Length: 265
Ligand SMILES: Nc1ncnc2c1ncn2[C@@H]1O[C@H](COP(=O)(O)OP(=O)(O)OP(=O)(O)O)[C@@H](O)[C@H]1O
Ligand SMILES: [Mg+2]
Image 1: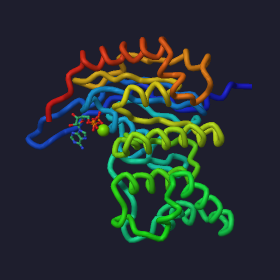
Image 2: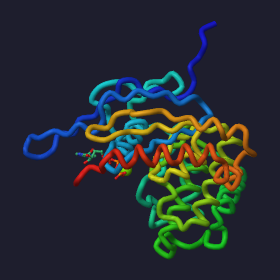
Image 3: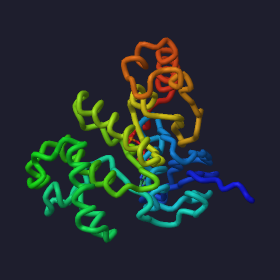
Image 4: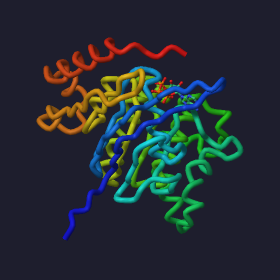
């Protein structure tokens, strides 16, 4: 029987934006990467290198100019509910309470009412928003609003979770809690995750593989696999930070970052 290639494959993807005054900008050039099912892939690279653009194409919100994206053997040619996206900016529905925001996708998917309540309560608790379940997003802080968006997307239990700097607006303590939550969910649900990050520690902590993109135009410069984590207790941040292999990898990525200049606006 033919071996099924589950997971995400990005093959030779380029994206050219045509801007006003007939100029064009190559945002991504011939990017190929493979993310096996159940793994966390991190897109890391300087500002403007095309991380959000690539994520939006995997979400089906934008079409590649060249190349192909395949998820679990299905070509991506538009949005689909098997892919959930947490955007770089808050995307809660302002007219719904926190609880109804988290339940939103579940009502669309037609899940039974009692199961739905259980799932909503679980994720409200996980992102520590149970106390404000009946508030509206505008009554919350920025970080709390982002947690609503994270809970809503997780509650839908997508096969592929796409996250664009989901923890950037959170204070360090909450960010660590959310990273730990993501790890638990991924392990439990065997979700595949493609996450954009600026943060090297986050990338090494969460990533099974890190796709480092260079800029002008965005290309895959290197795929980095933090293999040393397999010898450490799973999810133990302090053990990771204390490990010499971590420090070596962090330094290497930091050097790569400083070699890439962020793109001017
Ligand atoms: N809709 C668009 N029209 C024209 N150019 C665009 C569009 N969206 C993105 N770009 C350009 O594509 C390039 C990549 O943008 P993108 O938002 O993907 O970068 P990024 O890596 O996510 O950056 P950041 O880390 O700052 O979020 C940039 O040069 C940007 O100006
Ligand atoms: Mg971006």
